[in-house]
Length: 474
Image (tube, rainbow, N blue to C red; front, side, top):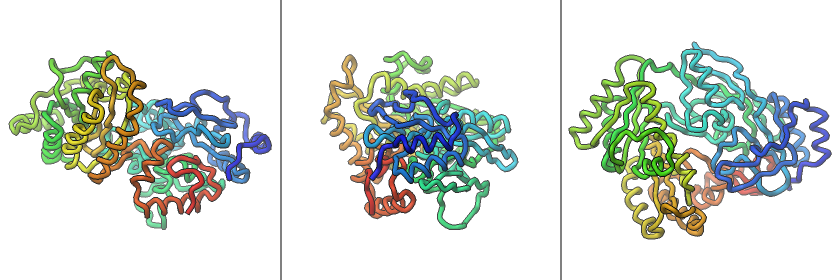
């Protein structure tokens, strides 16, 4: 049984850690973006090295005190806070902020867990390289948390998720043992992949303190266009054509709905919309090359797609400022959503061919269940990840419709599961979706997960209640 962090434990920590490791109880450690929970802590600790983190976990494990890892705090499923239970130790990555090495000739960068994605991108750029993990919160999101949830973002189509961008890890296990796994190797067949266990475990199996990350040659040129399409089916036809004509140069293929544009107008956010009318659907496509002219390639794609009836109109960015404006349209949609206030938000993944029928049939079912609500479906169409969110009608608040949230989510997730999809594409399980994992998860997989948790964290101190229900054992 877990116990609150006691004065005895805190005294032992103060006797062994430097004063800099103790943080004041800033509200940011106890809040999450959607404000569903308010966290708590007996103390907030910020180790400056794997060895200091090992001391914290060893003493916490001996005292059976819960530990909550905290990175940038941008997670959307409540994995970074504990609202109830014994008062935990919050371990922040605030002091793990060094880029330890950049090996440009190897396309490898080694960063500690508290380095933000933007800082890693800047360090890679200074070395003439690209670190492609990118999303709206990259200025505050930290690499330790990004790996802990295996985050996705805007360039998964070409470069993969956080897991695909990591070669090795340094991590502290719940017992306080340090795993020195910062390999820079592409090939290493020496037993179980602890890296792949830690990535996506959401801090339930250990604490990531540093990572060896893959870099890529920086593209010499990239082209970006916003194209209108009549339907998601037309968008998928365009995606197939883009793959045939542009190959692996396509780095992003984002689906945007007309509702997303209307939300931008309603909230006054984002740059000016590039079309006189609001199309029902749009695709934001980007191609990046080391050699050649990506503008010409996108223009050829548009011409072929226009002739085939797959697109209706389009805007090609002719400058970096225009490119930034097109991306700002896509990246500001979540901020507009937040300002309006979602009743139910869903981070789903589907096989590509299932997406058009899912959108049509699930949209119709939701219209019957809650006809007044507005649907904004958008996201990373190229890798099958959609953000599928429901909002109140104009002039009404989300609170007036929250009674239907659970019923809406059940309808959406049942429809996703029926089509072989996932209820969590890139945000993780956290505390929000523990019940969903139990409902939709494969029983053999869940049994294996519980066995792994029990083996690595026998006292259950690491982020209890996240991913797996607290106290679950084989």
